[in-house]
Length: 209
Image (cartoon, rainbow, N blue to C red; front, side, top):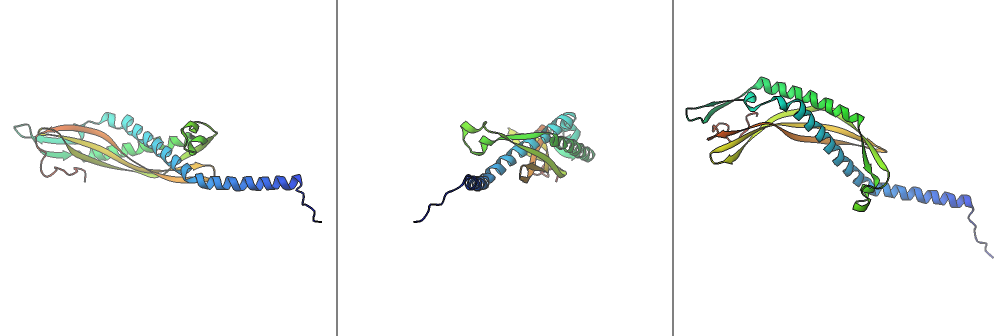
């Protein structure tokens, strides 16, 4: 007669550990994309907020449209010539770059927590479970350009808006994984309503290109 093989408690424990390890590995693999997507979204939002706050609080509050653009008008009060204050534009870019870099550096002291329940996508579980802690580390140099747009603002009126376009990167580090997240945002710093037609040489084009 064949004897049935008996599993000792030690063998059962090893089997349970093996099954649990395999299960966790499969779960981690299946949820990895979700974790990365959540981390990217949270990091991009946090970094964008930091960039916007730095520019709006430390740069744009001291800038007016007339400081940036010298507009000459004819006897009918219509704009016939527009000139950029290049020195001021360069100063704004330098100040904004410094303010943004300082603001992003402060993010290293901030920990971002994502509830584990959010990973499963269920609304009822969104705020449940242990927190996954993330750390953001700024990467490289902040790149800043000045751009503008002309938009119709009514009958015989054009709105001229001036923006800072900011590009940077942050690295998000959390348990067993790290990703690099590009951060791009456009921040308005000045605008004005131009009465009458915009000079044709600039109409529909950017003064800053």
